[in-house]
Image (cartoon, rainbow, N blue to C red):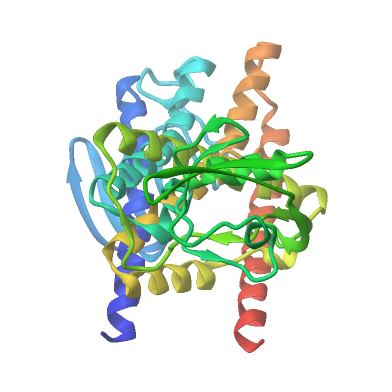
Amino acid sequence: MSIIFYLFIAFLSLSVLVFFHELGHYSAAKFFSVKVERFSIGFGKIMARKQWLDTEWVFSAIPLGGYVKMKGQDDADPTKKSYDGDSYNSKKPWQRIIILLAGPIANLILAFFVYLLIALSGAPAVVATDYLPPVVSKVQKDSPAQAAGILSGDRIVKVNNTPVTYWYEVGKTIRDSTGNITLTIERAGLIVNAVLNTKTIDSTNEFQEDIKKKIIGIQIDVSRDNRIEFSPLESLFYAWNETKKSATLIATGVKKMATGEIDSKHIGGAITIFDVIMKFTERGIVYLLFIMALISVNLGILNLLPIPALDGGHIMFNIYEMITRREPSETALYYLTVLGWAMLFGLMGLGLYNDVNRIWG
């Protein structure tokens, strides 16, 4: 298929994620009787519009986000407020916080259901490696596993006398081990015990940091043809764990970026996002759904950052009002919002710069 098709799918996928984010804000606003003046997918010049349910629904020219414009709220000029009964500003701070939280929460809920759909449809091993049964497909040469007599086809049923069902349980025990490891193995209907040491190697983690990793030298089958059939209960377990794991991974990554533990060169921009979506789309619908779920979590978590132009920044303003029982001054609100926009444009510029560097590299 042509690159135009994959680019269209990427734009459509991102628009779906933005739609659900803004739908969260919209739904919470309507629940608290706040007038939503505009619901936009995209920014910039309006390409299409329709008036419906007392809201203007629009598609804009730059499909890299979206917004819900509530009465009395204007991020372009935060000093423009309305205190009518149906305005955002007339609501109590805790109500405004719920409206602001609703967008990120909608993204997390969407991710959960996308992961659930992946599990119910039979997840490819490559997107659900942790949940593969611990059956050895390959034993590395000169490894502790080879020295202990582990064979391809062995199924690990216990590690240090603790029953295991999934591959990640084996990996966690190996990482946390301080001495010898005892594996209880099922082989051709027989139960075999093997005692082995771990081997420490140089590796990298999810954030490209150099780490020391404990291994025993076994691998499992993560080929594209290997699919995992989850029961309904296991599917819920997978969806919950993947949503939680994705959120933790992204939050940790943001923290490491902010503290300088990892290089800012790893920040990606719009080009990287579209490139990743297109590459996953080429592999099939399940892979597209998987990356959409991950980006949905990413969208939810990043919007909670305490930057004034984002949901997290507005939440901070409302928490301030709850504590001090007064609104931030118009001057402070204006300059903090301008600073927030400057930070956002700076991050977007850095992401674009890194994208171009990666392309030329």
